[in-house]
Image (tube, rainbow, N blue to C red; front, side, top):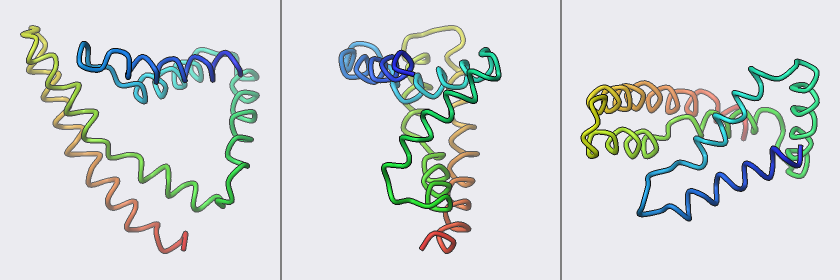
Length: 126
């Protein structure tokens, strides 16, 4: 757990260190790392990591509905998609148009879904 948490903090720090040089999203890197660990790890390890990181939530006074709302509110991150999508096009990479198109599509899909999800669930939290 300490290695995973340390790697997550390192990825977030790399985003600050490379600011202005290379476009890196620390949050996207941390989320990708968590998904790859969940897919590639033995199920018992995945469950234990989920339990350990779940205890970090216990430091807050949020109930399960409020936690769900926070998760839904975090879905529409157009700034990340726009930043990543435009870099490949600006660098003149052959895949630039495709990456930008996928980024725009993800914005068009996640922004309304996040807005609808927040609108449907805010009444359950407050």
